[in-house]
Length: 216
Image: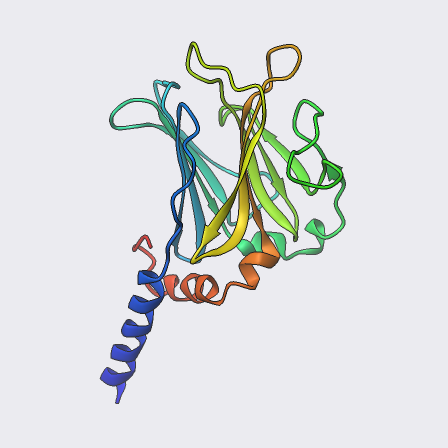
């Protein structure tokens, strides 16, 4: 009976992971990804910056978040990888329920919200390529400053949906430069309600805690 239980559990895990489909995202010049994985109950968000080179990497805890962390590292074939391991438990406390309305780091509005703001704490981490994290019980994500490759100029924002198993769980957007020629970057934002309403994704998060070293 116990062996049958493990067999059925393993089959359920296989089915849930085999159905985990992010879909194809539009290509942002100079950016690889973002890619989404699940490991040990965390949502792992990875972005490759093809034209950014660093000599050494660093891994840090995200401020005010006990279980979540972020890492930057030189990529194997050039460029830099930033990887964010987000644990949904971190935004369940009262600290993340009453939050201000935040904009992009340079004060411009987010292009994918009605009023241009997000209900979140803005947490800037200069050591992680000056990344700004946005966290609340409604959203979690980050803005990475990114300059396009030489000779390329996109004078508009490019938002597109981040889907898992055909269901939206967030949004990604390239942010154009401001009138001073600065402030461009990539913003990735997860919507907590959309994650909670995605049963396959919730099941995978739960099962991944049983296989802590496996990346789904």
